[in-house]
Length: 181
Image 1 (cartoon, rainbow, N blue to C red):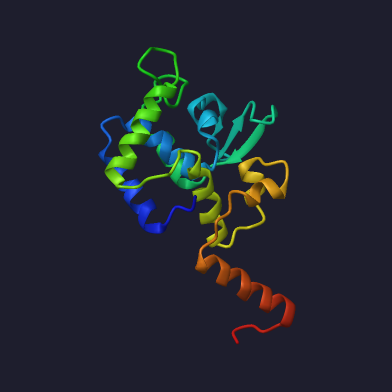
Image 2 (cartoon, rainbow, N blue to C red; image 1 turned 180 degrees about the horizontal axis):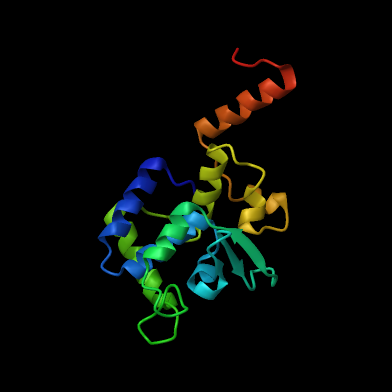
């Protein structure tokens, strides 16, 4: 479902209120990168090229490797985390990633704190795609999400009025040369 700006703001405030900031950072990274929570859970520092600002994901849902660009916020998040082991989002047991049950429990807490319902962690991928669309960065969304087709990417785009206006104004400018009219 569409996540409103107000809901997103409350969700981010809830991240700060979580006792376990590993879970909060996991969720932030999902929004920042648009990647699937399963891939983010498995993220390793050895997969990150900090010089280029990219993350090499060894295997995605399609069974293929993927190179995801990391925005500045994601790089800053990675730099401020402990980093004492290769696993970016470690679990309570040494050398394991954050557990499925652990992050799901944390997500339920986020929803309670933010007073939102019907939003899944996977919806954070749509938030990422929609934010990029609203910023006018349409051509790279499919590549960043690692989708095989534009049709799959369309499932994640939930443009609000601002994005629709931006697209319409751009289309008018290109098609009719309207400019600022």
